Length: 171
Image (cartoon, rainbow, N blue to C red; front, side, top):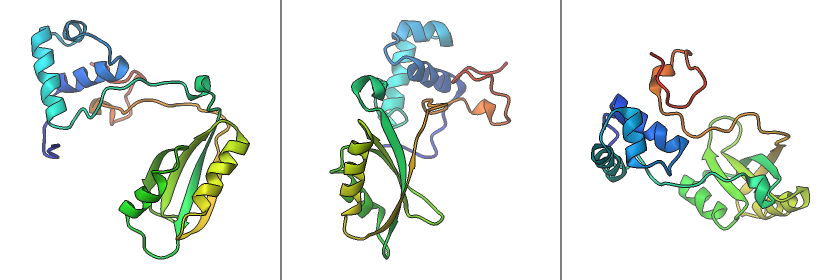
């Protein structure tokens, strides 16, 4: 269970950064980077998992290499008030929906869709449009991806001094 008041120290941040860069790194390799023993790194990783800071270990895959060459963001406006739980419920059966966010502004929801091609995208969009309660959709097709990085972890770069490397402290 995640505790929002949990304090993550600089070593924890650095460990998480190492895992984001390569989740297959051994505790020994991470320990060499953060100046801890492998058992100490394992204890910290186990604690971060138990406290819900680290929610999973996964592989990042190039969607294009799997045939998913088209992506779009679809702004969705519902008629009336719809709960986020209901929004999630109607999106879950659509496998092309890879992410969805409730948003402020003119629409209620921003949906990220991946598809093999434009015809496949159109099919997924039509399935989305048939959901009861959706009043309007507006699609923005992605032409190219300029930046797609994992979650930033090093909070020391909030002042704009980041050197472009994820989780590498500027000293």
